[in-house]
Image (cartoon, rainbow, N blue to C red; front, side, top):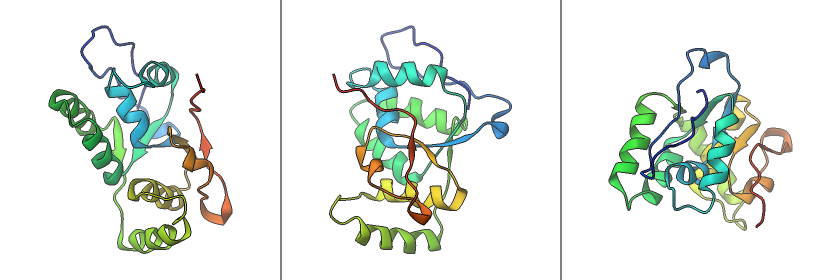
Length: 164
């Protein structure tokens, strides 16, 4: 994907840059929280996640469920939503579609994590991580410290928000 460049205006604008050699970069899952924080300057994690993404090297993988959640959370500003959608169109985030097998696995995980409680976007990332063998994730959600991938393996959270 490349790295975002520091924003220069007060209006939320994307500075993510697609790297021509993205296919050689490591793949990392991204959840809705960091996406919302990046695009929303009023988000409490905006500065920290923007700084993190400035040095990030890799290709973000996400799901339609995560995109839906992020767009809903960004719904107060159509321009910001459209900026995110344009970045999706430019493949700055790759979208991994769910299969029928994935939905069956999500149903199993939904029962397994009923006390967390897990949401559909999170569960979609778990099944994609298992299918693609991706261990790294960028998320603000501490539930990913509880969730387990195939063979009871933990996720590697690349961005850990500090408690301020």
